[in-house]
Length: 402
Image (cartoon, rainbow, N blue to C red; front, side, top):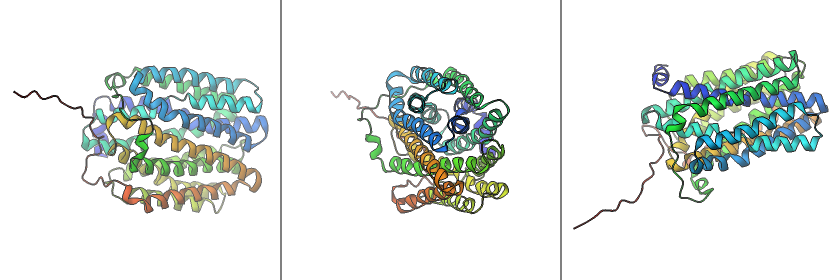
């Protein structure tokens, strides 16, 4: 814990973590809030899954594009414009009685305009701390973001039950606007300028570590998205139990991140952490009892934040600084496509085979997320005793000789 305390004493670190967590807090609320809202309005989890999938696909398309734009136009202009469009789209989805195609289209726009907060902050971190602190900072960040998933589902469920489902969505929009403006106003955002990349768009995916992180992130988030849908369907939208189970799931991730964050990253690091997730997911698929699901998903959660910390670390150590935002954009895209696919498959399976089938699908995604890094460990950088900072950008220097 001493390393985390030391990090939080570093000027600006606590502020930038708090600001970006507030801006990203809606991610812990929106999926569940929209799932409840749309199921109540249209009577189908499949329709809710399709809308969430459209939102995730829009965000997946935009991720690397808006991230790369930050190198051309600057972080603040890109984040402010996308923030405004996204907030308006979410508010309209909550308030307007839209037909299904209109709801899907607006969800796609909301996803397409989601502010690129995560790539921005991942790019800022290496400029705020020394190389020794970077890996613990990624771990602290991955752990701290679980606050989003601990409190977000509980707040979304509570507001949807006590007020109405639209109120949960509107509250998420308030967090998005307030947190986004706080993040943009942070001095660190103005101090860091992302160099314009000289490479063609998408070339960064040729880096094996970036591709590995994108694929494994896809599987990990598909698994968690399927779990979320399965848990909500297990208890119904009229019960707060689903929010508590998902909060315990996220609490496991918070505990795992803090407990395992100091461990060095070797070639088996990602497969090992995903094995923990897989084990917990398999246990969860056996029985839909509240206490059983809570315990099993707590175990699964122990591997999640540490897995994300490895993803961030191996990407950072494998690309040039000018490519970091785009690289994290692609990793985010993989995760969002996973969320879309996980939500859609889970919604279909719930409607046809029941809630337990969604948890079986989640376990299958997690198992693939464990197998892939095990088979591709030669692509996994060994960061034991190494600097996880991005590769410096270099320019040719003209030397005058006499």
